[in-house]
Length: 163
Image (cartoon, rainbow, N blue to C red; front, side, top):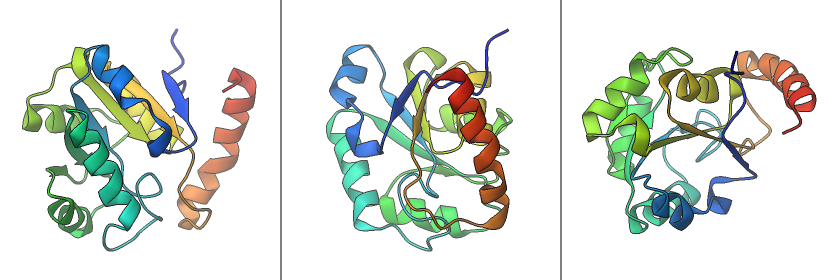
């Protein structure tokens, strides 16, 4: 059985991902987590890094969609500020939000990547959906309590699986 928590690729941060290489392998679409992937957890608006990474990916030819579990209008407002589409209430690690995002931007499993900072939500959802998963280290240490509770089990999985 495939480990749904093992990403296809790991990077310290989004800026270190080799997007030209991914594009060369046929990937054209990127689904993005926001909280602690592109900005600090629970930010109410994008930070400079968020804008820079969206611009970098778009310059490399990627069409983007924000995929967030946020149960508020915050992620939609952030996506509007970044000028990219968004799927809120994504239900990660379920796949419904991932497939909705792919439909929204016209993506297929074979040409889509998903980038996120959590194994139990972002990476599991991508792997269950059959798309290329990229794990990045969290943007900042400060997080809401329920995410903090998941970090130790994630750490154990990373040590056991050696990534």
